[in-house]
Amino acid sequence: MTFYTRKGDDGTTGLYFGGRVRKDSLAPEAYGSVDEAQSFLGLARAETERGSEVDHLLLQVERDLYVLMAEMATLPENRHKLAAGATLVTPQMVTRLEDQIDTMTERFSMPNEFVLPGQNRLSALLDVGRTVVRRAERRCLAVVSPGSSVVPYLNRLSSLLWAMARWQEGASVPARSQEV
Image 1 (cartoon, rainbow, N blue to C red):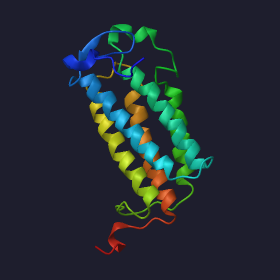
Image 2: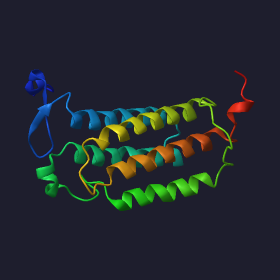
Image 3: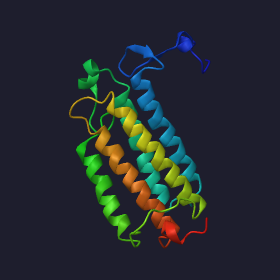
Image 4: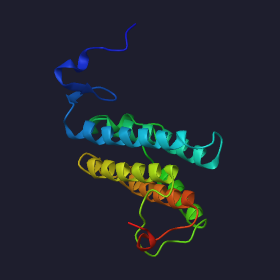
């Protein structure tokens, strides 16, 4: 058995539940950006202690992003085949992120000015992940089905990553106090 199939050599890619589209079309651009975000979050997770709270949070999010990618890689006519929470993002997944954001923001003082990323390696990686999630959110807007929770999920995820980065910095440091 080989890993490669040669099916994509013509510039197309297969979608979940069937169908093929060009690799440079909007759907692969959208779920490809999510895949990139997931990889950055994996890099951030590699900087954490296994079994730590940050490790668990990032692992949960990485798994959620597989759900999100499945939804984005499904043609609208096959959307009815998606399973809530397994291949379809749910409003409850968004609410869970909101609860995590609320819990996280209780752990640090909110900065009153712009924050410069880079206080430490983990917070910087979380900030890079946040910016990639924001790009994925923009890409998904072009292809998301009406009523989908994909965009709200990505929007809350970027907020959670921002909060996690500030928490990992310890005390918030406003941009103005930085030596440039």
